[in-house]
Length: 415
Ligand code: NAD
Image 1 (cartoon, rainbow, N blue to C red):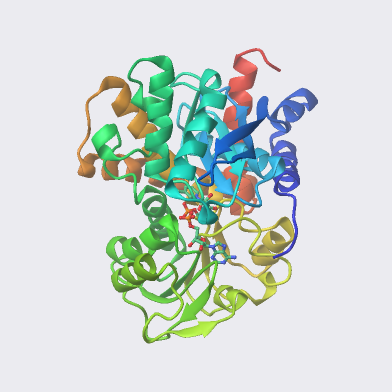
Image 2 (image 1 turned 120 degrees about the horizontal axis):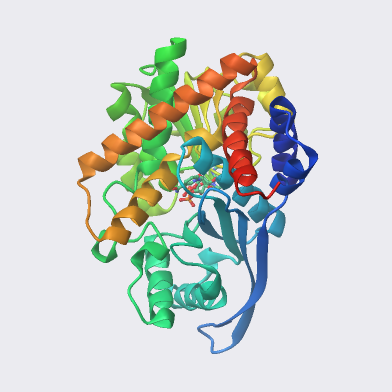
């Protein structure tokens, strides 16, 4: 993987949007840095009885439009700049789908795969003890990200409520439904992405019933595999990958069987009827639609030239480097950028927070309908900006998001 500083990439994107929007110097400076960032050490009792120290972060990138919102990632390669970038992208993402929220992100540098359930619980609770004064439904609302999940959120919410001595389920989203979670959250990111693909197909004439491939077979990737056919009435899944490798079958996989296999064995490798292929080969397959759903910077200047997909739906945050973006544009590939394509998750997280706050819950059908309305509207708002400003889709989405946040900053008198 090309080594990239994601935050520098994110700052570069702000400059490009600011140029189109003619933003003044103070606004650019304000939007190019996190408004608040916290880093702290966490001391966690491990199963061998010893204490281990971890580095934790919580960044409230911008809260002009509402409380900061963003996931918590547990990952061995976590750096403060990755979290800054992710918090920055969350700021534009919540604005693109027009949610009354800002952007934030958090993380812990750790290797969750080598930790026991009890160690992960200790770490999750310790993380909340460190940030409890900084979060709340009116300040900052965390959620899961890579290698954290509804169980992690349950421990975190419980720790917060214990500290505050009151119920406040809306403080953290993507909880199990039994303790304040919402219908429709598990597949929201993928559903939102597939909805944007549906709109792209309508506008540009792509054929969703042809082939598709998915890089990264976790929460977002698995749900995209299941929902693509359901929402788009067809499509053949010919390749998938996870951190251990990639597999291919030109006749197509049964997404349900593949998900069951991955959950049972921990990897897609060895799925019956599949052929193992190199990681990068998946990205370069001749498919109609490609879903990057792994980590940042996987589509780079090294492989972009070989990408043959007609549509790239970025379920992952920041999967494409700026150089790769230029190449993809020149090749005429329609990129649905992360801040639009993966906004379904935060949209339903927001729905969860709203339902928690008034303690009355919606049906799954209503969640799906409201998510569809939000993502469809956002897709067309971005398309309009692309046409009006004559820019590529990522810049179009940035222009929409940055303009809304800049306006809120101005109205508040910050710039
Ligand atoms: P996850 O941990 O459930 O899944 C990540 C998957 O990527 C795993 O299957 C892992 O094995 C795989 N992977 C890691 N490195 C890889 C590589 N080099 N090549 C191929 N596969 C690789 O995480 P997730 O929640 O599905 O998130 C995936 C991406 O989507 C992240 O960028 C995340 O920030 C973004 N995202 C997720 C959500 C959400 O609601 N889950 C919302 C918005 C954005």
